[in-house]
Each structure stands twice: as structure tokens, then as C-alpha cells.
Length: 488
Image 1 (spheres, helix red, strand yellow):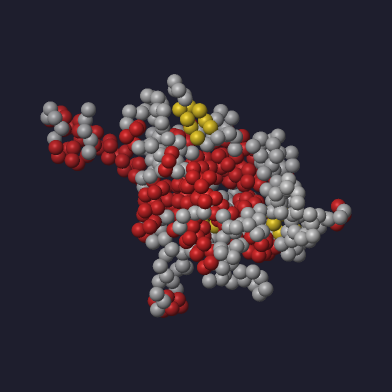
Image 2 (cartoon, rainbow, N blue to C red):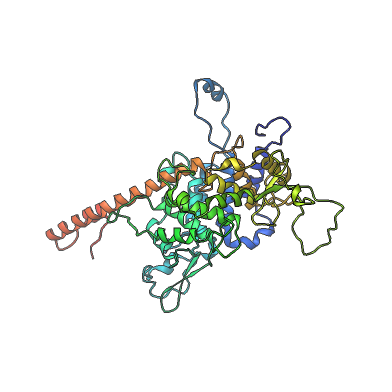
């Protein structure tokens, strides 16, 4: 099934892409993925997210469509209910007992190993405590929402230890406002924050916070102290570089991925919790960035014309691994921003070549700023569909490259952001379909409702136990059965 395209323009063969992702889901991945053993949660996100992009929910029935739909047998979903439940259990099995999720099962330790461990005090010393990481935690939450449907959305986060995960997240923040990737308990006590200084961790922290925290007030059941949002905003805002981009610090080289993460993080810090949109009027984002014109100019400057490599050129330069696809004018006066360019790609840094994923990082960043009009839609679409789309489905990194999960997922993501027919509307801030964001909102409400009910039940149970103990020297069996509370 090819999506509709203008005459003479390339089309997205959705059926072919679904076959590629079905193969990735059901068959062992090629040996090249062995180095990603620690990132299985990320690989699962790429696969399930891509299937969701390619299979939007059908529109509501109307009187005109009722009869046609009634006579057409339903198409079985690529991922059925039983498989969704199994995948959900697989995700939950990677939850760390102290909060967060691990990227692979080899980093998960049996729960019995934590029976005597005080998570807050980090005592007694736990030498083999497993290792949750911030990226796997985001992917796990996204997967739980992606695997839900309208009937199960309220319980999509059922089984997630919200309180411990938010406490673990807060502990990952450094004094300068930045976030690390992992926590390691040091011998003798104390926590080490590992993972370096990376804008991706800052973005992930805000996404996890938005998904789980909610609007609970201090003193209510399930309340958790927030991390230092003002400190995080300061860290991000001071990382803008002299030319408008974003990096790990203002003195480093700007990078499109870091720009996306900086913009996304600032946007998520004040994003509404309900009925929200990715391009909401964020006060922190639009009034805090020191050089907004410079940022927009830097992002727009990442696009350039793609040219076919010159077959007559000398290809023996072993120091240059990148395909030659720059538009190299003979003189500076020949530089052009011709609006009728046939192929337009995006790079992630100055003097680099076009890459599928940077179409997403740049395009997603511009979408989060509400500046989608700066995307050269038709030239970019041709570049992706004619040069990056693979004959078996998926997208490669460079023209001629085999497809891989990372680039194949984000190739679909930017096409969805640009409004490609047949794809699910996509949220450029949370990197999942819009209907998945709605399920995240419902799942969060479900977690908060459960916390409130458990808090009320605990209070009532404690009162009943106290009353029962004043009447008897031991707890009546009926009382234990009703409340589940056993007094000390």
C-alpha cells in the first residue's frame, strides 16, 4: 500500500516498510546488533514506535463509511493483544528495584537480592545492585504507552514504581543542574553519577518527569520532591554557543542532536499535562534562549543540496569515510539557496554530510519551535524516499547504506512530522505518535489515581487496625482480610 503522492513524486510504500519492521520484531537481528546488547530497550522502542507510526488508528465511522466498513473483513493488527501483553511484561521485567529501568536483562538482578537494602540510605552496601539508566527508563515508559490501546490506556503504566523512579531521577541531577546517565553506590556509602555531561540526559529527564510526575501536591499520597527545574534550565540556556547552536557547554562544538534535546527539554519543563501540544507557547523556551534568531539560523543552515558522488573522482582516500555529497560552488558568489532544489539533506554539524537521522533532529527541533515552514518539505521528502529509503523497507544512514533500526525509525518520524499521508500524526517533542501521547496522559492519571486510592486505603486500614486492637489483644482475622494491614 503506497501512500498518495503528487504525480511524478516518490511514494512511501507502507506495506513494504511494515514487512521490514515485522521481520525486525519476529526474527533475530543481524550480528551487527550484538554490540547493542546493552540497548535492547532502545531497539524495541525503534521497532514498536515505527509500527505505530505506520499503522494509525482508523478515523471514526460516519454514515457514509459504515456500510463499506461493515462489508470489509477487519485487518488483523501486526501486534496482537497477546503479543502486546507479553511485550509489556518483558518491559516491566527490566524495572530496577530502586527505580528506573535497565537497558537489557543482563543488568537486572533478582528482587531477593534487595530484601535488606534501604534504597534511600544505600545501606547495607549492595555490591551487585544492577544498573538502571536514564535512556532505558524513557524508552520503557514510551513502550508501555505504545503497547497500550484505548481500552488499556488507563493502566498502561500499571506496574511502574512511580515514586522510586522519580526519586532515582532526582538523584541523577548534579549540582550544576545537568543530569547523568546512571547511579553507582560507592563503597562506604554515597552515590556516583556516571555518564558524562550530555544534553540528551537533560532532555530525557524532563520527558520522564512529564510522563510520571503529574500535578500532585505536597502531602498527598505519592508526593515526590521535584528535581531542580530552574537549575536544569540554567544549565541548558548557558550551553548555547556563539553561533546560535547548542552543545554540552558554550565552549563546545554545536550539534543538531543537542539542539533538539535542549529545545525539547525547555519545552517539556512547562508543557501542560492535559490536552497538550508539542508546540505550546513555552515561556522558558521562547523568553529564556539568549539568541533565538541565531538558533533558528543555525538550524536552517544545516540543510544543503545533495549531489550524486562523482564516479570519476578518486575514491582511494582512506581518511574520508563520508560519501561526498556537498554542493561545492566554484566561488562564494555561486552559493545559492534556490527554493527549487531537487534533493535537500541535513547534517548535524558544520562540514559534515547529510544523514537520515539529522533530518529528524533538525526537523524535530524546528517543529518544537513552531517553525516547520523552514523545512524544505518536497526536496527533503525526495531525499528521504529516493536516496535513503531501502528496497526492502526502512531507511539507511547514507545513500546506498543498508537500513538500520535507528535511522529507519527517525526517517519515518520526520516524514510524519512533515505530514506524510498514511502515517500517524507525530508529536515532535516526545517522539511518539500523538495518540500515544494521549495514552500517556491517561496512564499518568491512572498512576496518580492508584496512589491516591492506596493512600486512602492505608489511612483507613490503620484506623481500623487501631480500633480493632483496642477491642482485642490480637488482630481479628476479618480485619486483616479486609485491609491487608498487619500491625507490628
